[in-house]
Length: 512
Figure 1 (spheres, rainbow, N blue to C red):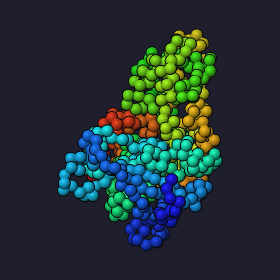
Figure 2: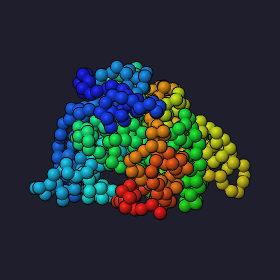
Figure 3: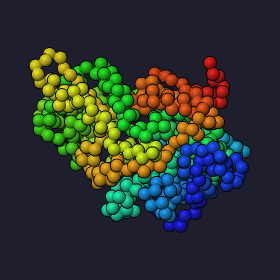
Figure 4: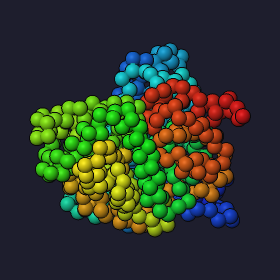
């Protein structure tokens, strides 16, 4: 934790007042009513420059900033809390540029990368490659460990106990400070501190990083030179019940991915059924971490396997090692792979805050929306009881059991050891109704920032239809729709995707 004294201006303005201040420098408001977004005034904050080191092709410099925990977005989340946290940023420059004695880093335009999540730190480059190598040809790149992750003040079970004791309500309130509005407020003060108030940066956002960009364009567009999305346009930005409606759509996407998976690996229909029947007959099996594997946990192996490059293959290889003794004992290797299938043990913020990213004010609560959508799939391939019954009725054809996708369910807080202490915290967050407003469609309708979006037609993480609805709300946004890549496109072919988006944003790839 940082100092208890807040050295950051937390005066709260409606977006209309904030934008007027940016253009006129006066505390005046527009007469036209706009969305009531709370936007803290960005300021220069305490900043420490850390180590500089090299990996192949890149020179990296560490930065640490002291920022307020609470920007006052959530009324019930201790708005008078003066605590500070640390936020970590890694600056990346091509070594070919940095090794030039006459090189001046500040003359390069800046690019901020916003990682997917919520609750994941930025990648740690081992060498130059992919989108990062391409970006470093023109930019100095800043990799942000979003608050609560990586080398920023990290949310872990231990940290929550340290700052909140055993008070679950306080833990829930603490987690509310880690949404896109706070991340963007951090980024704005970091920009002011590193670049100066008048210098804009380009944004590149993957998945949840695109949700953060949409907040940025809604609340603080004057800091943005251009915005590049990769699979991250948030859905239903005008809707109250975005979480539930989104998961209903995503289950249809996941159904398609399951059908494709079983076409690729038809032998796994029987394999998965055998495991499911075993688990139903013998009960959940203990895993090496101290957790258990149930049929719901078996279905959840699709979490990061369906809809990403190489995911089908990883899942198939995982399942083929399932048995130590066929139909009698699951293998240690398989049960260990079940533990490793999710990152909840190291990134518990991802599980606790996952559905909150869809809550856009107006009294909306997430209310375990993925679970609600799942429970409505009775009599389908997602229904374990139905599938097992169908395969025991003597029919010659087998009904496959479908995997679920990137969704967080209540059972995970019972079966995964590192999530068990957060079960009540997660329930409190699921029932919270007074979330802050993240986006303003009205402000996006008058957007003046160049925007380019890669939208993946078969994305199982961000529904393509809903993403494109949002794109139409962002004035001037150009959308490149492709079925060539999955949600993980930036990892598969990052250099080409980045180059195309940048050309679109600059108008070099002309509208046709």
